[in-house]
Amino acid sequence: MINAAHKTSATVLAISILLLATLPCCHAQDKTPPPPKKTPAAAAIATPDQPAQEKPFMPAYKEEVYGDPETFSTPRLQFTWSPPKKDQPRWNQKWIWSVRLDGSDLRRVIDPKLLYSKAKDANVLHPPVRSPNNRYLAAAIDAGDVYYRMLYDLKEKTATVMTTGGFEPQFLWTKDSKKVIFYADKHWEYDVQKKKLSQRPMIYGSGTYLIDNDKRFLSMSRTGYDIYEYDRTWVKEVVLGTNLIDNNHGLSLDGKYLAYYMYDESQEEQPGYTVVINRKKPSIPILKVSSFCRNPSFTPDTKNLYCCTGKIFKYELNSKTKSEILSFYPNGVISYLTLINGQSHGK
Image (cartoon, rainbow, N blue to C red):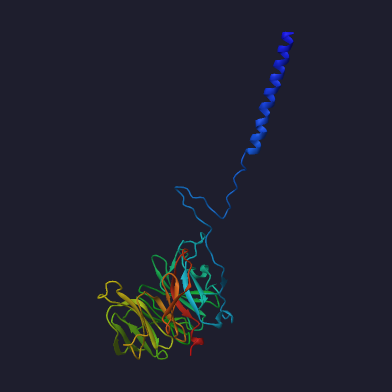
């Protein structure tokens, strides 16, 4: 009896142990947390050796089409910006863009493949300048061992090397869009229709402008500006002050208003000013603000002045108010600002 009872108890005990061994598995299965979600492909995980990189930023844009009436129904702002795209030959390679004066309607001016067709591993250096009829684009391309002066036909989609050389180009277009004048070690004039390059008498200064219906040059200096005839005959000098910053000025389309940045060593807290004057009354500033304005560009009606300091700002000259127009921060800076399509919308 004892042996039978003992065997029965052992059998019950064995079955109980087996049941207890199986029950926790079920409970553990119920309590096991769900597997972690997969990281989306657009995101990235940071590690000590590899910082996190988000999906490259790219705003919505359209291609600029030469002659499109909607695009060129108003003046526009042209500028460079390096979109953070990994498929670029150079991470910071500049592309050329344009927007309306309110910062809307972003368009890419030229296909980067055409822009850098002469040298893929290159970059835009200095402001590219559009012809008054919007068909041509003059640009300086830095290819490392050579600096190209390029002419792009935005209608025919062609690229032409006008010449090579140093110096800031300071591209100037004649009003009829037939000639572009620039620096490349020397002073040059390129006839677009004849495809002919001619050397001009050198005009020294920190920036030149064509005025008086292309009959004269206004050449900036560290103290003001000089006026020259088209053949380089000197006419007069106009003194505005001292320590004008080189290559940071702008002239209105009608040649009446001038914007420049002046450094004042006597002012310790704010040693510099952006100044706007009427050339007929240079002693009475229209605007004088203690902030830097790079690539100052007037609207055709001369009511507003646009500036580029990584972002695009606008000064309303009557009210002296400043407003931000366009920014891609923190996804790169905007540079090399110019006004385009302004001649047909002038007074």
